[in-house]
Length: 278
Image 1 (tube, rainbow, N blue to C red):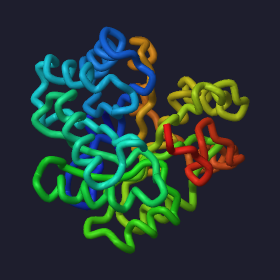
Image 2 (tube, rainbow, N blue to C red):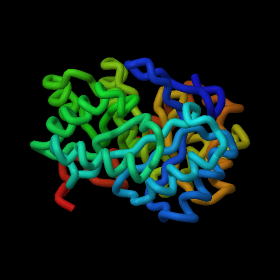
Image 3 (cartoon, rainbow, N blue to C red):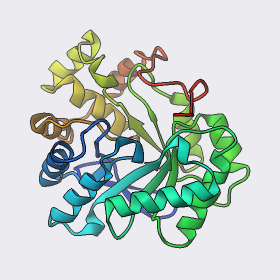
């Protein structure tokens, strides 16, 4: 169980990935992203999640380089966007992300969405980059169980991570069981449901019981369920507050209560009903 911001889970290839990180989705390239990443790193974060779609890889890389923290201690994830998928295009897309990040390595590279007829060729290119030592770990994002089964039936290297929308309204229990049974680390994006669940009465009662915020309760729920979590914020006070989750524990009854909030509601698209051509 994670006990501080440097605590890690071990992926199936042996690479250590921090349980807790900072997401920078919609953070603007330049000062906004740089300040957010700098704040996170100064307060103990060692995991930063970006993507080519976010158009802030340069700022993430610059902040990591200028942090003064040894590169090996910071885990950086980026992702390949939908229009860049396919074997050859993936190789070019990775080259651009690597150039924009300007780091000596990429710790984790993810397929952003399961683009039909392309994700298997995309994965084949990622396996090549991994075998060549250009990536420390490879994984996917927004994959349902059937996507994972399809990919794993044809791949040489199974995915190490699956990053998906996951929060108390979308608990992804079946997917979690599948990933745990196949040594794939599940990771939550939008763990706070973009703020839409922060006024929930049941969560508020649990938070009051522990002297914590609702956001902290949700993030602790992620960790106690064995889920890597990457809440997004560009506000200093929120970045610091989100990480204050290592001095309390939810009871099994409280975890069950949160699990019961599941409705299947999404803030993003369902991977089975997503337009990939933009």
